[in-house]
Length: 170
Image (tube, rainbow, N blue to C red; front, side, top):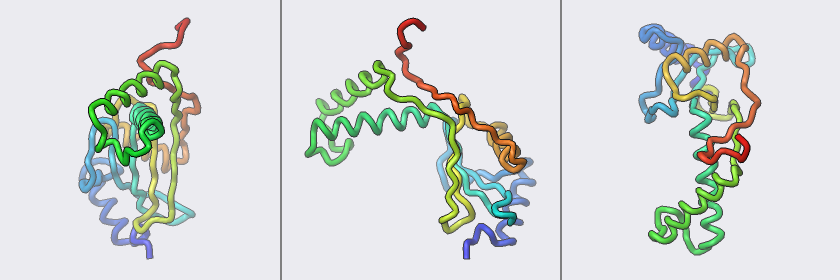
């Protein structure tokens, strides 16, 4: 049985959230920073109350993740014997920096807000959410939970790039 559907666990999350003055509880087992947060909240899934185990992060963080994944992929192509970046030499790391700059100059990466829901987890329903906000604050989390639970969450479908190199003509 998925313990995220357990009424006792749901009650505990509700009580802890109310005690904190919010509709969510931060997951203190995960590292939090201004670009991301892990938290729990109670909502409905298929008409049943459930705990949502949520990871919320900024669009800028998603951009940087995709940028470095692409750069590392290209580094692996250039140096096929390199097993992972942690083992890279100084020259390889300098090459990686050059690849990052090239990707940014070519404005190859663009990102869009999204939400991914995964019900095939051991605890509740897992959600990954990426929003175009400057930082993740309690107010941002509260607005997300309120909008999500009211079925009023509207994701921005515009693609964004955070390249420091503006396109010509901008």
